[in-house]
Length: 308
Image 1 (cartoon, rainbow, N blue to C red):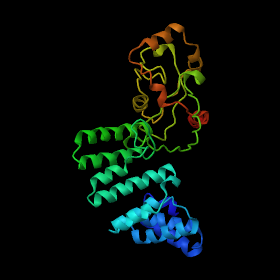
Image 2: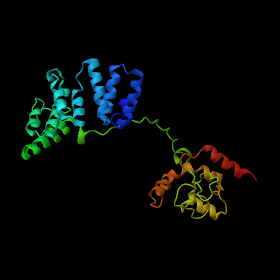
Image 3: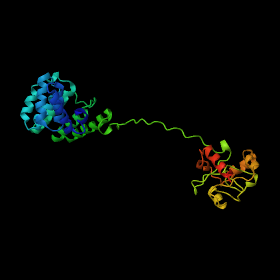
Image 4: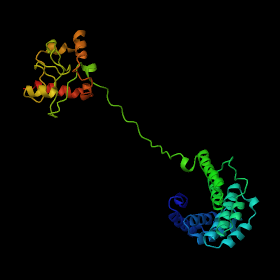
């Protein structure tokens, strides 16, 4: 938990590390966690104590830069430099050595020794042709010292190098956004349209009476005046299902009076079908209004009409 909250809430991470130290204070890793979280939370006195304990338990100088920086934050600049001199920098890995160089540079600047601050940064890693994860911060530190020395042109070059390094490393303002994959179960496919392809011309839904049952399809040669191929009935000029139902004084479409004519709907002549398709008043999207209508609904509507 201390590691989880270290970046977003260092104070809370420090409390978790303290809780761990009460359970396992003799473990070097626990003391290291307490030191790092205290340092991130700005508790420099606690951090310095824990860094000393960790270093005494393990002999590891990895965090010497943070320890020196704690002395600096507490205002003990001379003591910070003495602590830095205790360490053989050749034994440090690259990242620890660079961190220590930047901290020493900051201490020298705080003491007013700008030349010493600039000299502390002259390490092999200060190379604009090579990039490391710490390069943008190292280049920025170099630019700040040069600006303090009044060498503005050189400082501007190093500031540009900061942006170049960030772009090359994909960090800072050029970091890729965090992408979170969310597993979503695929939706079940909707049933295929049940329009004219399955049962000839499909009926419309009656939007004025939601409970009304639509009539079965019917199309006769005499219904050539109808502008919509579906639901053509004997009602004159029936162009919309709700209007046709209102004209008949019923909430449902009127059934075809001639069963033979209803059965003949799928066998309509090609010329009539072409004329219906060519009619510019026919809405090509109208099938979406009644796609997926269940056969049981049609059968129930027929049963109700047969009842006395």
